[in-house]
Length: 161
Image 1 (spheres, one colour):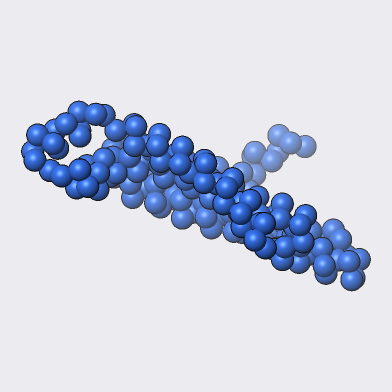
Image 2: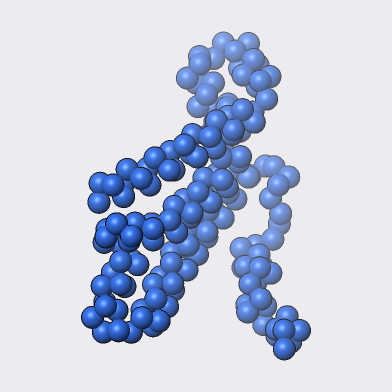
């Protein structure tokens, strides 16, 4: 368990640091200079000026990293750590229903990544307030446009046959 925590932490820590660094560097230096001209302290400048402007650049990459880490947890089953895939392996070693149990594990991963993606959408929308990046499309319209089965007219699937 300790090896799994250490491995996943070291893997994600380097990418997280680079994401935050890139987000902070995306804020124009003039913003900091203007805040210093107003007499604000370094901590307040960071909290009130730099970080809110860096968040729209940080959140999407961080959300993708979190979803990627969730998917990478299946790797720890190789070192016999009790995770979703390892639990499925233990069960199918007893009852020999390999494909159905792997399908169940797959569905769990799909559900979890979908929930994290929905959460990421709302966090991104919160930090995109007042910018031109945000479109006026609602969540369900975006979901329907990206998922062919939810479009409802079946024309997309007609071309596959």
